[in-house]
Length: 463
Image 1 (cartoon, helix red, strand yellow):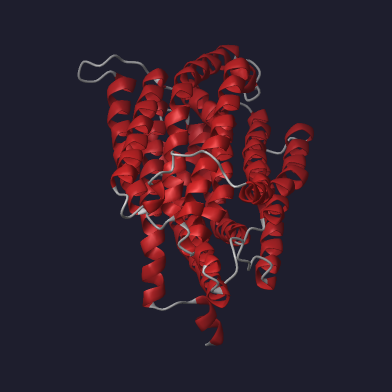
Image 2 (cartoon, helix red, strand yellow; image 1 turned 180 degrees about the vertical axis):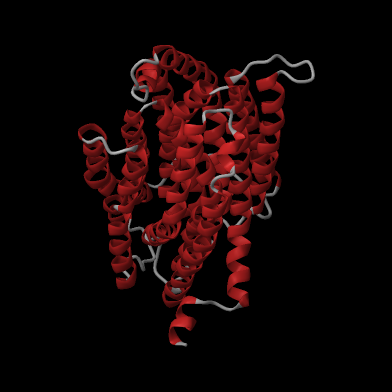
């Protein structure tokens, strides 16, 4: 009974949690569902086109998570400032986001323009299929060229949407995301296949659709924020000055830089893991692409729960409600794990159906099914790991999360994947599972740190 009270909340608790998490689940779910449809549409053209886009999106994920890491580091302060109703402090966090994201945007564009081809080639392996490799490279090159024009609206939307979420407004970013993915879906159909008089552009059409949808999403979020100053008072005068208090900048850099570096290293590490898997040939790349795209659709629950946890617990910490924060955090972690246990079971049952939607070989479909089931088995583990990570981050323990996340990836997961992919003949499926199960070590570390309460801190002021 005592355990039940510790891990399970009342109806009011779950109503509050779902009020924060459901909009993000819907937004991320629709986004990933449209990504799945986008992926299927391109997959209907051919395996090379699908693989080319998958490789480029893996590279762009490094940029996206660099932005996410920079914003999240500042967002720790934004959520706690809003929790204690310090709207001037929220303004300073917005300005800081603008500065750091502008620098990341410039560096990202320069790197992808100068080294795009070389980065794509890192993922192209296999003997006796040079034509397929060359075709995959060309499709990836075309897709990347257009996608670069969508980085600016992505950055703007992330700055605004993240700040809205930190202030408790999760519905508007969700609605903007819904509109954007619907625009993307319609334009994908028109431009990839050339329907209703539109040109048949293939992978280029997919990229154009994504870029346009990003501009639409950014416009909705920016316009709404500036028109609702009564609900978002921090936006009034946010651009009248650009100065950020020196001590706050130092504090943000101390807390936020490890988090930003962590996200960059984690994204780069994930790309490196995929590169290790690609050593098994183009079939492995295609199967991993199918598996990852479908898994992401199911993973939205624990991803959104992590974000919801950081907002809810962060605001409680900022308000000085330490014991309530501890109790809320424990119940949120349990809720995320149980939800993913149910979703993982569903994913195991449905795994054979999704690969059938792709125009690819039976061998790739069978391999994708196996990888999907392995991902499903890992979902509860990932949910626990993800929520403990966000727990530590909500209290400003960013150096700990840096060690917990990217340092572990680079010092444990990547060396294992590198050795197994290059010095053994282990097939892609057991290779993938071995690498994923290493995260059990992180679960143990996360459990110990969360239980000790090392994350329970108010980082924006005294109670």
